[in-house]
Image (tube, rainbow over all chains, first blue to last red; front, side, top):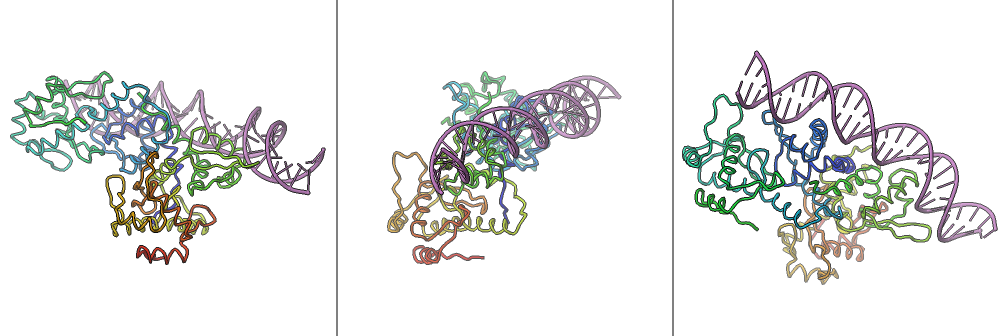
Length: 231
Length: 231
DNA sequence: TTCATACTTCGATGATAAACGAAATATTGT
DNA sequence: ACAATATTTCGTTTATCATCGAAGTATGAA
């Protein structure tokens, strides 16, 4: 049985500027590590840790420890919905210029998620890899197939898991908005690194949003039969 | 690049227990004078006055002076929507008294969510409309079918969407007590308004909980084949 | 006018919690 | 094993803000 909820508890949690900044960063649905969230909120890691603990405790966030990182994401679509509803009544108005508006759009479109590719592009590319049977789901990870390994090698991606490294090779990173996983772990990092080297993707000046270049559009299409529709 | 500092401002306003209590009192959709709101929040008139001034300033409330009284109401359906959305992610409040328990049951059974019907009745009636194919889900909204339009018109419900209004016509609103969607938007508001006019439903003294009258039981059954089981 | 009611402003007090430095814990990389 | 990185815990400081008493303004009633 549901009880009469007291919304003051939750609203006051969202009402702190630092926590609000963190929640908005997660509104896209991506999982982000504590350090990134601290940077997004412009507070020290200690402070961020305290805030995140509160958000976890209240059930607004879910944490997935991964090695020394701890990834956080929104606990449910209801949380995202509530944040969006609050935004509709938060009157004016952060986006003062077309420039910022465009940048926001870029952020939603593609974004590096710590050190791997996230956003629409990250999820779509992961899906395409699954279709092509380059990778295959296995528990919390992906397994790289022989064909996948060959293809990525040919592209110049570092695919050997260094035996000494304890870092996970091909982790699944959940994207809440897309409700899908995308490729993370050291393979995700290597792939992203190579895509930057090839200039298929580029960082936008703000440092986190990512842009797919013309060369990238062609390359992704030629190599993976992967075409992006930009709305 | 703090994308929306106003989100935190609004959320922190709602996050104060006294202000939250006032806002919830107003969620029934009625205007209330400052003194009543002070009592609802269990604070002194001075304190209430300060809180109300802040809520006015932030655009969450609208004030209407009536002689020496000053009446307050929610500024828009968006505010009501945001409050309901927050309730869906809020922790349960501990019940301290039998009176609170009864009140809670009444709210869960039927209430107004700013200007439309929510609770068991709201969700069940929406379900019945879906069964009868009066409405149909489409994304985040409902679509009113020809039969639905005809039937509701015959009942005296305003079903024409006013073109200049940018308000959503038939929104799906997540019900915090049922965790299902009910009919909101201007259609939900019109329907509810008509149900009050017909005296099929009535507000209980608290202003938010709703009671289905005998005429309502008969009317809903005759018109929609909708029968309510009261536990 | 005079009193009562409804609400607001001002000022002082007290409680809360946000922030960070310092230090601890855990994991990865060499 | 050792250094570097990521996160958490603890303790202290600081600032904010909710609260109410006291006093002020405005309206309505007698």
